[in-house]
Length: 81
Image (cartoon, rainbow, N blue to C red):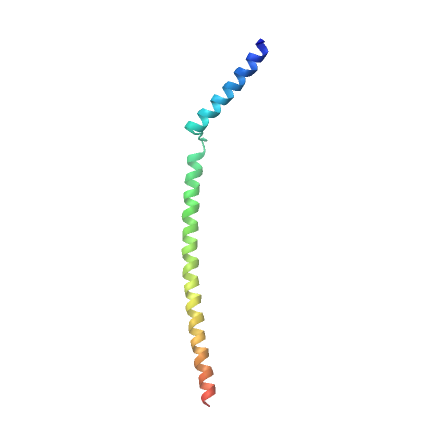
């Protein structure tokens, strides 16, 4: 084997070993903790927004049901005339 081929094989082996170590031990970016903290804040904000939207939906459902009931009463009153 020529020295050039040995050199190429050594580079390939180092790349494979590096890939295995990276997969085994994971690779954390320095900004991961900051990004996670930001995501937690965003998650909390979105949970609050969903809660507010659910509350508004309940109010709209109640109004719709009340209007439907009052509309039925009005129709019945008109029939009774």
